[in-house]
Image 1: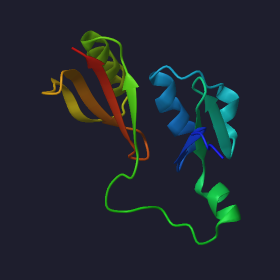
Image 2: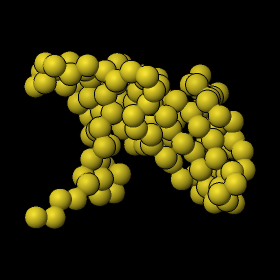
Image 3: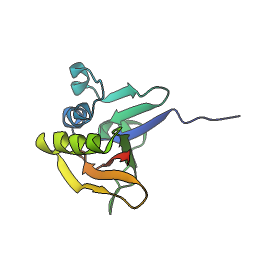
Length: 128
């Protein structure tokens, strides 16, 4: 047996708000998905899954949201250092939370960190 990673799930409090955030970062998500309980976006072999808490508790009534910090982070390759700055500007201009402004990291990348509406960490990066 050779399992392969096929999906990454994010549990979101407000589907429309979460999907709007990820659209700013370029994900092609139809507006009709805003009212769904479960949404899947094909990222080219791996799917990004969005679920409402009610979806999770429908099959796992003992589920509770994590506390004390994030448990997962997503990273978006912005192509160039200027692309990081542009993505940061687009996300924060759209009213989302910027956590760490773009900087040149010691590991050789331009890097920034934003949060989606549920506080999920989203890294923006590019090789310098």
